[in-house]
Image (tube, rainbow, N blue to C red):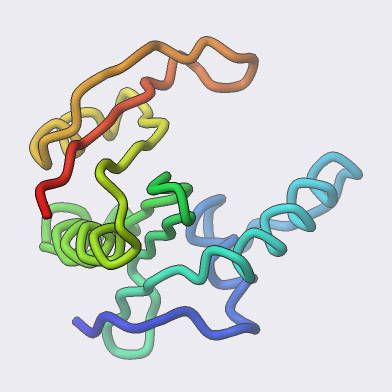
Length: 141
């Protein structure tokens, strides 16, 4: 496994990781989401884990210590990809001077984030969020 920085031009690869391989951007709503998401990648500059030239996971972090995305290809979950990404994002947050990390966490990802020391702050019942939890991890510098 190799951890590296995102390179412009990898947007489609990361989109397919998040939305499923072969995902198409068809509807006008999806087009807006794609445009916004693609612009976010340019700002947040994710870190990518690849194996044998295949992207198997990625994470991004904004300047305020918010993890926007942390995704691991399902076949690679439980194989250290998430740990590699979490170590990198903690290091990046500390370098940015953040005192905490925050993330909106799906119910499925709750055990992973809890394992890494995140605690629930509030339940986010915004439409389309499906009961995601706002979680926080306090960092020691």
